[in-house]
Structure formats: C-alpha cells, structure tokens
Amino acid sequence: MKSKNKRILLVALAVTLICSGLVLGQDSAALTVEPSVSKAPDTTVIADGKKAKATGIVINRNGDTFTIRDSRGEETTLVITDKTKIRLVRKGFFRADRSSNATEILRGLRLEAEGGTNSDGQIVAKHIRFDEEDLRTAQALESRVDPVENLAKSTQALAENNQQRIGEAEQNEQRLSGQVEEVSGVANAATAAAANAQSTADHAQ
Image 1 (cartoon, rainbow, N blue to C red):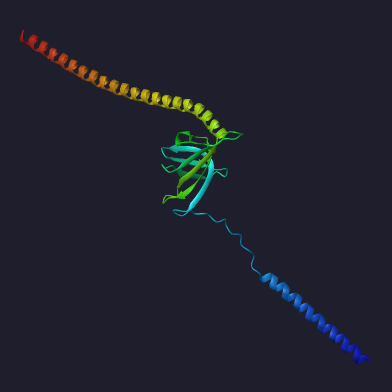
Image 2 (image 1 turned 120 degrees about the vertical axis):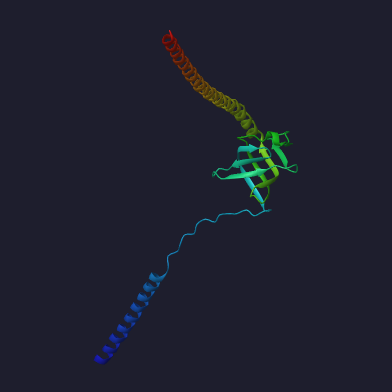
C-alpha cells in the first residue's frame, strides 16, 4: 500500500515538473520574441508617364503651369497643353456641363485633374473639371485680391523710386559739397596770391 502511494506521488511530481517546464518554455519563448518595429509610411513616387490624379485649390499660376494644394497641404504642379480638356460642371435640371478654357483657371479655384506625369514629376493634365460655384468664388476672390496686389506693387515701386531719388539727392549733395570745397580752395589761393602781390607792391614802394 505504501509503495502504491509512493508511485502515485512520483507520477504526480513528474507531471507537475513537466507542466512547469512547458510553462517556463512558453515564457522564455515569449520573452525572446522581438518587438515589432513600426514602419514609416511609404512615400509614393510618381514615375514618368504614370497616370495620376490630383484635387486641390489653385494657389499659383505661371502661364500654362499652375500649382494646386490639397486638404493635407501637399502641392502638385499641373501643366496644361492644347490637348487638355477643361470642363465646367453645372448643377441643376436642364443645365448641362459646358466646355471651358484655361482663362477660367484662377487662384482660389478648386478643381480635379487627371493625366500623366512628365520627367519633372509634374502632371500633364488631360482632363480638368471644376464646379460652377467654385469658379464664382474664385472670380470673387480674384476681383478682391488683384486691386490689393496692384496697390502693394504700386506702393513698392513708389518706395523704390523715392529711395532712388534720395540716393541721387545725396550724390548731388556730395558733389556740391566737393565743388564748394574746391571753390573755397581756389578763393583762398586767390586771396593768398593777392596778399602776396600787395606785399610785393608795398615793398617796391
């Protein structure tokens, strides 16, 4: 009876040791697992000739090239060609969309463009579309911004002109000062010569 109890105790002890070994093994394995490293977001690079789309507000324009900025603050440069189709979207019944042209692409206009990229990373637009209400907003903004910019340019030009005049006046003042000093030197020399002549005459008498 005692031997049977000892066997049972040994079997229980062995099972306990095996279970504890498995638990320790799992803990050590869990400890050896390397922590996951957070990856930085991929930066999408648009290759030359790849199709691309862009949506944003026009912030700058230079001829047939203009820049738009999206809601995330990212800027994209678009290029207009003779093959670019520009369309104005109009809402409401019996109001169909109409064709537009590059003259209606103003600063402050929200638009959508799609096309292919060139070697400079710019999007050569094939299709451009914008809403009629957005166009009105851009036109109103343009009518207010242009006079302010023109006034600023006129003020800057006037300031530059005044600065140039001040510089010229300073140069003239310096020139006159030099002439006055030169005339003063000549007068002093003449006075000295007259004094010498007078002294010679007095001595002669």
